Length: 341
Image (cartoon, rainbow, N blue to C red; front, side, top):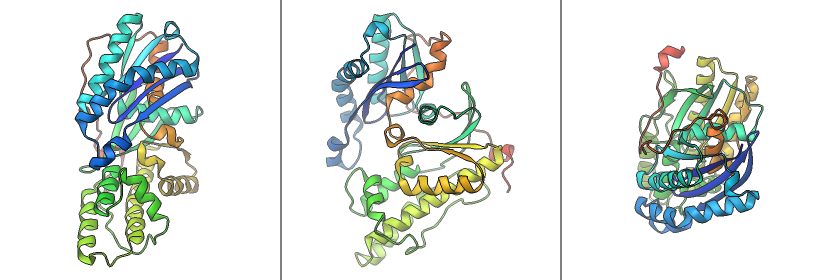
């Protein structure tokens, strides 16, 4: 079985082919980062127009890279939720057209669930059940993956996502877009203990909150008006975000009884975060899986992998499914999974 994956939920136009294993046969990602840098963030309308231009060439490149003909594709998987609605519509429309033309099943994939499967692509020994922290510019969620068809959220951000906090604070600090990677590079030369930034909602809940941290950074920068060492601010901000992410993940693992922890999403490319998480998991005899950077950011390989087992079993969502900007997974109240109050 070969599955073609299509991902256009934000500003990455991606196509990939995944074969038995599942294993990646090809992965093409056309980034728009340089284009959106002039505005300091993703402009939805521009992203949608670029997807229109790039999606078919990306699919053609993925087929060529894998040495696969269109007739060899057994199913198509596409992200249909959540994300920028205009961007999603481009990928879904393309997937539906190809599924109809090629006469193959079409499977709709939840973007957050796809990030869970990036970890399984990176480490095939990762078996269900496991806990996954999906952390990016748009998501910060702790998800229990009980099986390939059963997922539930035990904690999520109540305001800003962690990646959003990174990016917005980087902009306050005058760093170039994309802000997260730029801030990480700057933080390498700073003291993470220089500024005592707050750690919101650190105990008693598996939810996150980063809006107060963003406000604290803004006030600090205004108060010291250029007298601060910007490297220390970056390092202290990064430490505050990483500390909360690691603490909450360990709390969730204990509350749910999970012995395997995975991470996905763009913030999983942050080395300071993944090193601290891996060390914390190791000290508690927890398996920790961190995908390579190429699978942390948005990509179509994880989309195809998320639908692979369904494709093997002959599932087909048809051509009538909706495209949704928002679609949360089921949320179980933290008290129900034994979090101490």
